[in-house]
Length: 435
Image (cartoon, rainbow, N blue to C red; front, side, top):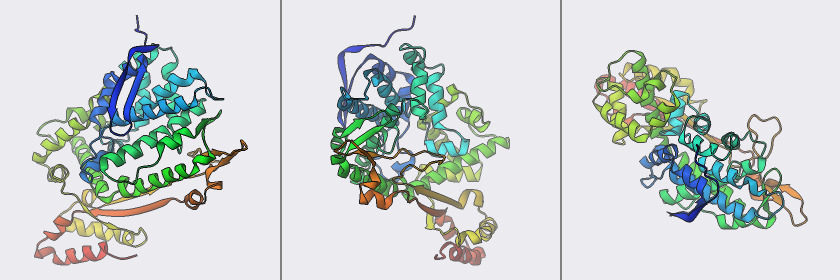
């Protein structure tokens, strides 16, 4: 018989948290989910991937972030209780969805996903609905509860209010990671008045809205997010580490497909190299496993894999130049030819990486990704979209910013001998063209 996790704990559990001071757990269901092996795995997955290479304090995990999103959602519910459009029966759904929203993330998630065509959202669904401890706990609440949670996280739920609480342009997820990342990194960009925002949040049938009196706190939040993306999340040194990480995975997969005999077979990665990992394979993988292989691959016979791993483990990263696709990219074929002629494989050592962000957007009918805008509720009860009330937000709405960087091993370029002097000069000339 499945144990029931309905009801409250005999005594409230409390986590000490550097961002929210305390995280309060009083539901048996939440406490049981935190104790599952799938949730505990998140302790071994960093929240910010390779950012610790740039900001040495960025060692916090998906586990701590997930608890934070749960806590913000719990506080939202405290504000919503007793108000129109809030239904007490949605409480568990909101809290569980907040806690589990990131449970499908893997090691160095975004770099890993690119190479292996993996999707953390698909893994999240598989963990919630599959043969897991998480699913056993959720099923104790009701036969359809796990499916309801998965749909909220996937943004396919008919419960749009609960969905917007953890996934919208102002949600518990963003409010936690901006503050938490800023705290651990040691920057001031991500700070905003969350307590004020929570106090002025109101539930409607379809989404969370903000009282107009809280508009300036929301403006501050949006600018915090904008600064964090360009100063932290897209930091060029972090991206250099991501480039090398991706190339290690790419090289190891290539060697495996060629029948290469690794000194120590990467058993944990074989199913990913073959493009058919099981859920068990995925759950066994975390950053400690990946870093173990990177460590031992420093002694591999393959020069490329060995060099890339030495670079990653010892932070000997690629340098970069800003590129204009219309200028340097016109000489891309020549650059590749020069790299090859000088003994360096351009598939691994000449990499263009692009980043783009849209700090805020209003609803655009027919868009592939529907962005639910932030709405203000005016004193007369009318609802207005944020950018129509805020000149600051209107000035950045719908404006996508993109930049392109070309990464290459400058140390290798410096070390080229006299035989390659002309090639070295031409490479530098092509790299440093101005646009």
